Image (cartoon, rainbow, N blue to C red):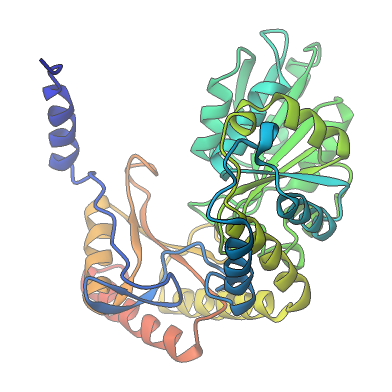
Length: 392
């Protein structure tokens, strides 16, 4: 007889009663600036596809050619028999783009964090110091360690330095921060973090999933601040601005070799399908050869945010193509999202527990593929719905 799983239903009912149960939209087309959901054409403002590379001809063709040559999968984990030459080519191209010695590709950004963090510390004699708004994958990676832990207020360098002083006798100190924070769209002061970290001999790890393809001419937050060679572990994701899938660790050759030999999530995961690896390499090459994608992204970002603010919307701390429109109450954010959806605009409501109860928002994410006409249509609907809801 099967186990009694009624407790699952109870927990789901509780989520539903609080209007917190996930019901993801189902796309019936490629994820681009325009997509089809539920038989309806929509303008996409909820994707991480900042540079519109998911359908770029060079990326798609590279995936098709590699699939025809190597097949649909590699047949093994990379450590045993699953490393193909295309995997190494993708890693070399990423390292060249990032201006570092080497890189290592993981199955996802999540597995990069949960696989790497536990290898960098050992026990209570070590300490991890983490920004309070770090991504959940970082939090999960930290939980897998036995190290001491300290959380500092968001982007508060004075508090970080105080914490470093309090833990100066730790054997290993690891500072972890997001590069671009995914809910607010603000940027970590990585230059200041690096300066205080070096004063205390601390290791620095940055998760730049939302900074790659966006900051530093697309190279990310380390390049944005000119810190190549000073940040020990730069993690990222191919599934956002790169438009493909997978996680990445960039740094020294020593770091690559160490992670390759110690990250269980790398050692025990089947390797990337050949088509994905080829698409990863092609996406980076497009970024290197076609800088107009990043320029267009920032033109759209600056125009859209300025227009929203001129209408009276609160865009929070945003400095990047992640532009939240603050709503306060969860119900207001959900109503706002629903109204926009009926107008053909796909934008997600971000509510508790993803953010504080009084900081619900709809989160827009810009794409280089959106036209000025697209943005003007969206802005018109934001103004109409915002007035109806009393937000402006």
